[in-house]
Length: 127
Ligand SMILES: [Zn+2]
Image 1 (tube, rainbow, N blue to C red):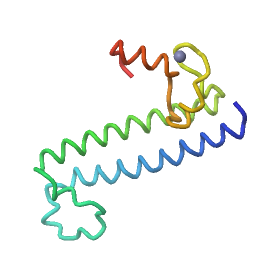
Image 2 (cartoon, protein in one colour):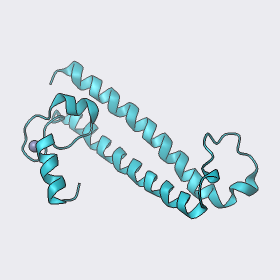
Image 3 (cartoon, rainbow, N blue to C red):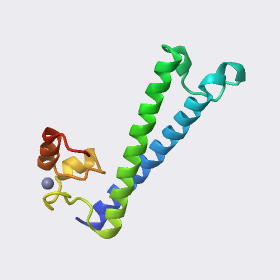
Image 4 (cartoon, rainbow, N blue to C red):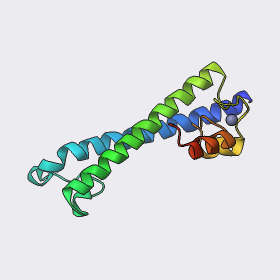
């Protein structure tokens, strides 16, 4: 892969990472503040009113799910960024073949090529 392409992917990954971290931090605050949110009174800096939807418990579970997914993706992005430094970015971890570029554009932190990903999903293995 060319340096220019590698840099583009790096930029994409860093942007996505920053966005995810922002979301995760926000949701951490949401989950923690949920119980005393109504007492707090200052909701001017809360962009979405999750407290308005459904029950508190449901919201909290959903928020925790979102936090975990976000943190997992941040970890995958960190690994992809390390690979860029090592020069192994875009290589499938299982078969060592190059991952299709279209796939990388859609999912820059993909660790496996589409074939190996499919095998892993069918096998129900851990990702
Ligand atoms: Zn593969």
